[in-house]
View 1 (cartoon, rainbow, N blue to C red):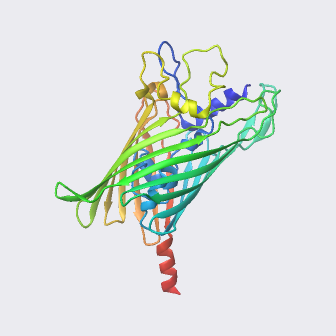
View 2 (view 1 turned 30 degrees about the horizontal axis):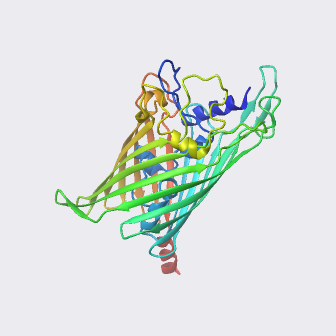
View 3 (view 1 turned 45 degrees about the vertical axis):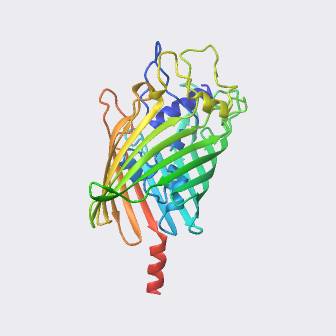
Length: 386
């Protein structure tokens, strides 16, 4: 079994894409190495249709848009998220995410995060008669970031990421090539804008804009053969609208557009690896104009839309919708969630409901849980008790 085939199968499995046979001028599902980097880690964004590039800054901004941290209200915070993954298919695959920030001064904030993805226990075999070997594949990404206010309303952010992916252990999937754990270094460049408060139908409102170009990094290899795969370089842009209805009620809306910045697979090719000589930067620029003849690059843009309602800044209810074109994976689903905010911590959860009925979606009933800690409140409470 070729390593590239195995990795492609894992990529489809991890993201839950519906893969159709492509003929004629149909486009291809875009696959990359380490697709876990694109999985939404936290419950708040997951409940809002996976929109988050321009929402209110919090500890999870390291994933969505590091530049948002420059406008975070607290001095420090921490978030821990957990999600059983593909639970309708397996019971030992899960995603854990830990993210936090610390405000250096009124203009600068640093952040860090760790994303760990466990694929459970897998038995690898060369053929039906092979007893195979057992292995626990796992992947993680460690990030550090810095956000700076460039003006009263605008901020910029830069973060760096170390990626480690061990899918095969020390064994060979092909029987001839020695396998290795894949590693990569990547960077994110981001920006965030928040408006002044303005009147909206007699209510105080603010709008926000966000942009994040993430996972700009070297290709990743899993064997000594020299074959390398793109990591999921990605462009996410979006906007948000916050409206204070009255003293106790407020609503937030979010809209994100998301596009992978890697080449689209050709309709047909006699070359086993058509992108082997394509560099990372070249691939990013090519991704804006490499759709097959007669097709549209717009099909490669995923849309996320979400809404959030707060009562008394304590209870939150969220809903959203995620759309991906049928020819690019056909992930289409509704999302729901709720949040409870207390003095020191808050709890968020989300739930996913597929809207496609012609295929079994492995993401059905996906649950995510997040605990968010207000470290400022924790310190104040400790000092008061002391």
